[in-house]
Each structure stands twice: as structure tokens, then as C-alpha cells.
Image (tube, rainbow, N blue to C red; front, top):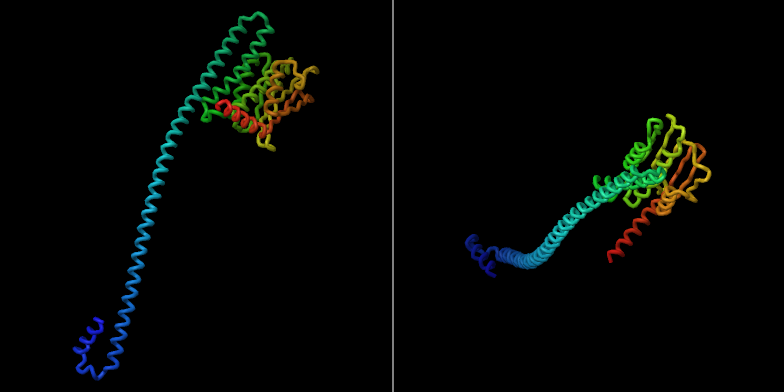
Length: 310
């Protein structure tokens, strides 16, 4: 209404005789007044909408801020836990390194004692048995040495280990009269200590047996071959072969009558493995170990550990 009166006063100043255009002036004033009324309603609705929107935004901001504070708290707790776990892991790794180191040293001490006993033994047959026991213990000590020197404290590169083991055996048995050639074909393969140890002892027994008995005449063509294959049909296969005189007729892995072959049969059963023996040209042992057996054994070891911990 105020705008209506204001317009009338302004028109009186502008038009000399408003009566000359009474109808047009009235319509103009009404339209302007209606436009003002509509604008006022729109402004009111907009202000109300902004007020509601502002309140919603404030509420949402408070909620988001609260959630953000919770997330920050959770993140801090996780970071603290991670630091504690990392610290605990470093301590356990250091302890495990020390354990492997001490085991290796203890085994080395045992091999030293066996060597002294062997040197003092007048019975040649007994001295030979002591030397064999010494070599078995040495093969286990080498695994622990590799473990505490490697980045992984639970697994070793079995291909690298086999090369070191066979070199050690050859150094022990080769003489000027007998120089056996060694060929190793091994793919890179990581094995945990529970699997590597029996395989290492099997290789130790068979390579030792070849070095001792396969080449009685000794010539430059004498050869031992070790092959390690992995990933084929979810199995590990390793072959130990020599081009020597072959096995004696009364020697059999199925009915072992020596400590070495008895150990091989025991370790093979432990790994659910199989062996094929070929004596057509020298002697060849082909061992097959399924990955499922390795996983089963690890699961069994884990359950046994948990039961003892409980």
C-alpha cells in the first residue's frame, strides 16, 4: 500500500493532470503493486529456504566433524597399534636370528666333537659311521646358517642351498685319485625350513652314497647330476642320478637295511612323496612331492603350535 501511495505522489509530480489518464495510471499502479507483492513473497520463501538450508548445513557440518574426529581417533589408534606390532616384529626377528645362530653354533660344536671322536677312533667302521653322522648334522647346520643370514627367517632358496651342500660333500670325498664331476640344474625355489630340512637330508644321503660306492674304479667321466624342478602339476620334483655301477641287488628303498635309506624313507613319508628308481644307466632317483602335502604339513604344524600355546 505504501508503494501504491508513493507512486501516486510521484505521478502527480510527473503528470500535470493525472485525471487525463486515470484508467492507465490505475492499471500501472496495480501491476507494479502486484509485482512488488509477488517479489516480497518470493523473497520470503527464499529467505526461509536459505534459513532451512543453512540449518541443515550446520547440522551436517557438526555430524561430519564428529565423524571426522572419530576417524582421526581410530586412525591414531591404528597407527599406535602398527608401531607396537612393528616393534614386536623386530624383536621377534632379532630373537629368531639369534635362535638360528645359536642352533647353527651348537650343531657346529657337535660336528666338532664327532670329528675329534672320529680322529681318535681306531675302529675304521665306527669312524666311518661317525663321519656320516657328522655330515648329516653339518647339512642341518648349513640350513640354519642360511636362514639367519637371509632376509627371510623362515624360508631359504633351496637351489642355492643344494649347491653349497653338494660342494661340501664333494670336498669331503673327492681325492686325487677320484674326482667326481657334479652337475646341478636347479630352478629358483623358496622352501620353508620344515620342507627344506628333509629334502636336504635326502640329497645328503644319496649324494654321499654315490660318492662312496658308485665309482669304485674312478675315472674322469664319473658324474653326479642333481635336478630340481618346480611348478609342474603342483608338484616339486628333484632328481639325483649318477653314471656309476648302479645299486647292489640287495639294496632297496622299500626295504631299507641301512640308516641312510631308512632316513630317506622316513622323510619321504613325512612329505607324502614318492620315488622312482631307475638303474638302467647308473642309478637315478626321481622324487615327487605334492604342494598339497607341503600345505597340509604347514597347517598341521600350525594347529599343533596353537594347541600347545593354548
